Image 1 (cartoon, rainbow, N blue to C red):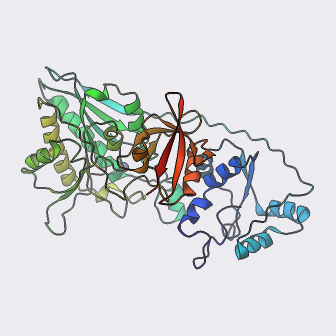
Image 2 (tube, helix red, strand yellow):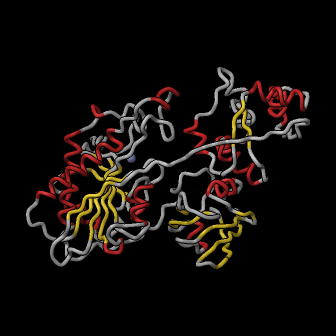
Image 3 (tube, rainbow, N blue to C red):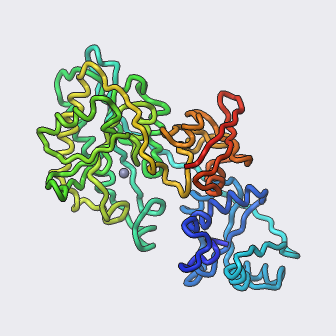
Length: 452
Ligand SMILES: [Zn+2]
């Protein structure tokens, strides 16, 4: 059954905050798989089916079910027929019994077998990062400065949309003027300006319009895995994501610009202050390079980063993020500032010195409940969870987990994939201490982690 018992009951909910997690199709599918189910038949709960007993959208089910197990949905009237003849009870009665005492009503459906045949073709969607290169000149020419902005957004909505009503959420163009028309426009403008500079000397400039950011930093992850120019020789990365809503700070009345990564190189803070004399922005500085956009991927590979952002707003991830709300003059000011920074970074003889900033407690991956503080490799082949990054100061780092490790066991249970890992983690709370089994260089190791 979809969702959870008492899903609409605000007074005595099923499991408080984590109800959404238990309700997710992905959780149910990986749990069923964990219990050796051959397939899963899902039916709408009565609340969902109240107006219409509709089928789940494939754009949801295809993303949610990563268990490699067939999952199909039946309408309630068909399930009613199965239950009436098999158990002598209609579906609604079962649901209400469960809602009352929260006890499962698992039973064999006498007289029924199911054989399913499903044909799904999932060819995947080929997407590309778009990269432009301005070669360097002189003694620094082998080093690189990356300037990036993601060009993907949410299309017609669906996954990631924050539109309030369902129609907009699933079928309205999400323009993404600020997120990230603004950043990509600034990127093109910077490439245009720098490309026109005659006899430009210094480091190579690599302009990247990333794809797949909204689905989980896929584009930058791909670039960092297969960089066109070595990351070890990448002196800095500048990211522009949502720079179109520059507005004055309430107290100082100066234009407020959020900058992540100000502590990711020893020189960055002073550099920003000196360049800012001309612009007089009010900076909100986040020393760490960890933050919800593509610079994080570079930062976790020890590249100094700066990420510019003019702030959240009520149109964020909604169809109303439109171009008429963009502060064009403000965007030009941000581009001018970044132009000055690039001009400095391409030529400064000594490259910025990377600093791993100690983590602030309480920030981290957007997952319910306690986390280990790892960046999983999405879409990795093989069993378990491949770790593509370990966040400083968090339980995984403290336990000695390293990039490239594969988590295959958690508290005595086998970890098959990311879904399974998340399901197992959801069963733990802060303060729990348990062992995780990992594979490192082909060897099996056990580490003890303590959740915060
Ligand atoms: Zn964005």
